[in-house]
Image (cartoon, rainbow, N blue to C red):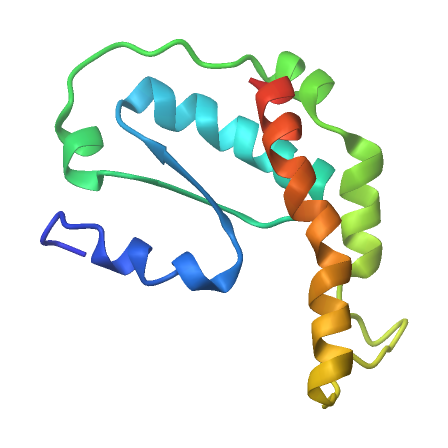
Length: 126
């Protein structure tokens, strides 16, 4: 949003994503890495956002994470698991079928373990 009120981000609150906000360019860089690792380890999608006007107009030097360090940080086995769950014509599967309310709530409850683990996974990656 060009208005700087984050209404576009706040609209996504009810979708089940974990949200991480960055204030500076350095935070945006660091939290992008932390969010990616945390989403792979928790199986909960992360929405990482920042004030685009502020980060694009800030004149500061940042310390980039080296590519080699990034390779070491990344949980490659989780990346491969994520790729295997992707939709592909090579291994078709059915998702999102219609369910009655009782079965739907059972599925919602079964996903709670992922959401309950998010805080500790995210803190460990910081």
